View 1 (cartoon, rainbow, N blue to C red):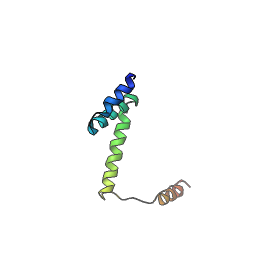
View 2: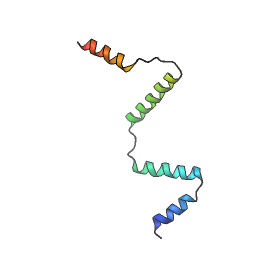
View 3: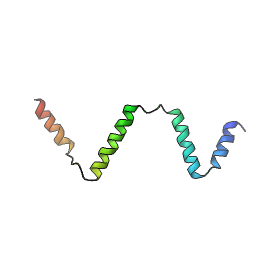
View 4: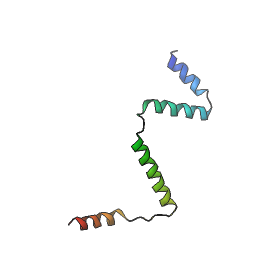
Length: 74
């Protein structure tokens, strides 16, 4: 049995929460770090979605928005 098999066996013996945390740590180790700008955009997106869900902002159909944009550039 190799060390990877040993690690897998040990990981499977962990609790569900511990396995989830281990998975997060392993994924973080292979993903590039999130840039400050990307993190800022993620927060902004979450804030806008939350405001929409709370009914604090209105929306328009995309077709209407594009039609207005086409009208404005003519």
